[in-house]
Length: 119
Image (tube, rainbow, N blue to C red; front, side, top):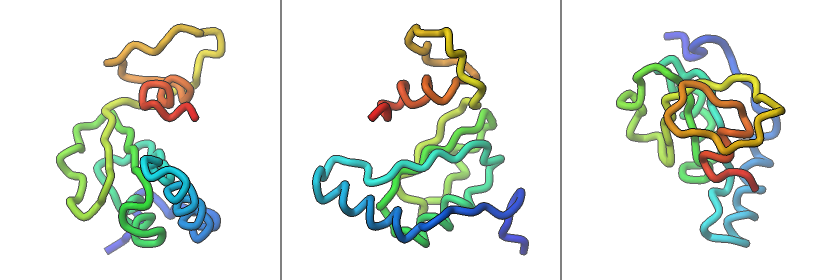
């Protein structure tokens, strides 16, 4: 079986992610450690499972964005996974208003604001 899904993904220095996440959690136990945004799953969670295997279970939060109806397909073994049924688009640099929940697409700035990931 081809485990590459829609093609291989590359993450630089995953061992550093593990260490930085542990440092953040040591300073603030409420910190997510690290946050991974995965855009366009197409119902496949191989990337997120591979990240979890490499970095450690429960180390990162996985925020999966896809406007398809794949939330129920998230594997139970994938911990701290959150599905968002919207797509990402280019951020309008002139829009200074708060994003309105329920839209089909958001820019990255609006996405981080909606999820409380601005810091």
